[in-house]
Length: 386
Image (tube, rainbow, N blue to C red; front, top):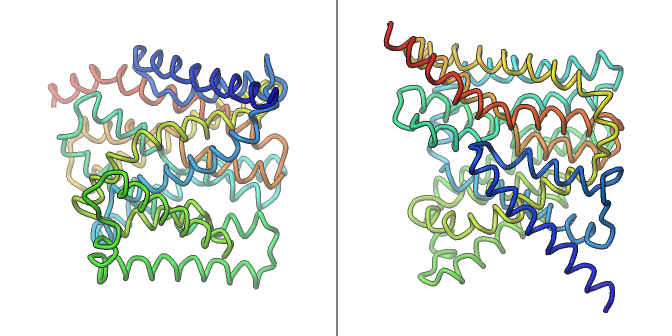
């Protein structure tokens, strides 16, 4: 009984503290992700007041957070949109991949961390935070701008790339042989292809099975299906996150909209727990030695995302101010980056990878939205002059 009481006290304090931090972030006008990470650092190993009793529970909650994050992300798109985006924006998406995966991979190789860490760090520096970027576009009134579809198409391309990248990384982290790794990747690609075909041709049957006029039943069906597919994907050594993402893609239309509205509060709760758990796994005393490197890597990443935005918007015939906005909107890092770093940390790739990734995400998750707000007047002046 005493242990249960301690569990409730610790968990209640964590959730209440996250609520306070979220309110503070809203008032300041930044993403709450950096504050959640800082909370995890404060109460993890080497922090101010390490938690012990509730860490295992938070670990399970963190896994649910990843699944719900990817599920709701998949609900934002349908198979038609993904295929259209892939065809129309492949050149810009490939430029995004090369420019932004390179800094992380080169950094890991120069530090002598090895090829597996290089692949992990490539993912950490590559993916833009869809959640933070969407909030920036909304808060600054950029949703209706001409460059916004370009930004969103790049985010979709990144999500598709992640669906292929995560199984590759999972295979490498598991230390599989070349043959076994190739089988894992082939299974992942086959799974993605099958789900897209099913979503395109038989989506109405899936939707009729999941659909319900009762919100409780609908939420249970969607979450249950996502967890079931995520479990099967994990057994196949693909990725539970990719499995959940594909379930989201398979649902579309009004059903996807209703499911997303129902799942958003649940996703936000467990996503916050996920970011805290990553912080709990990272020793803050180890962030000091890599802080300078993280700042340098963040600076390089800002430049590469700006170049990506300029290139993609220019291909779409957008003026200079719109190109600048597109690049700035792509700067924030958050969900996927921490997911990738968390996988690498759990596999014990390198002891400094977790602290470096945490410091890197802290900088860009906090600075990205602030940069957009600070340069908005400058961009407006450029547009007026043009």
